[in-house]
Amino acid sequence: MEEVPFLGQQLTQEQIAEWRDKVAQRRQAIEARHAAEKVECYQRFFVNRCIAESRSTYRMEASVLRKQDLELNRQERLLKEIDRQLRIQQNAQDAAAAAAAVTAVPASAPAPIGAAVAPARTSASAAAPAGTRSPAPAK
Image 1 (cartoon, one colour):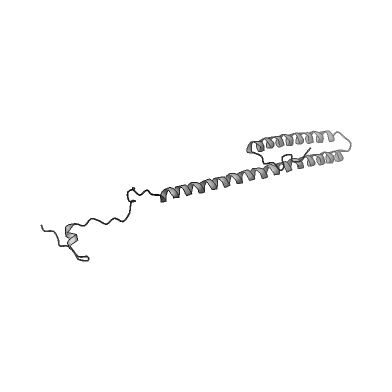
Image 2: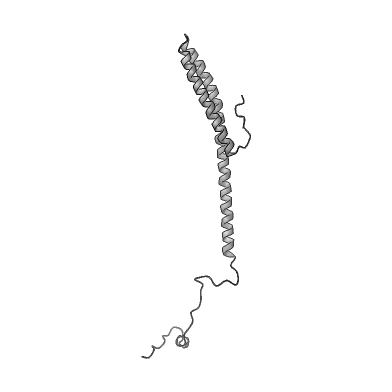
């Protein structure tokens, strides 16, 4: 049995989920066999030796499953990082497109709101020099 058969391959989310299910099923089978062996060991004369052998076998098989879990975790982190980088890149492109749309104002467009527009002068204020008050209107 190969320890990590998918090592060196880039798995998809679906493949990772399938492998996780396989690993979980194998782990349950190993734990069930180990529990059955333990019960069987108590029927023998050399109980401690039997339990030690069973535990040793269980640890070796569980070690293989642990390596597979670690590789699956690594692959999942890699996929998440790729997704994160793609989101960052997409957000940057969206921001650049929005900035380009804002700066490219057409020439026939009206002046933006808040643009400095000189107020229209009335005849009374036009005749008065700057800094002087215009005469009060007659009643």
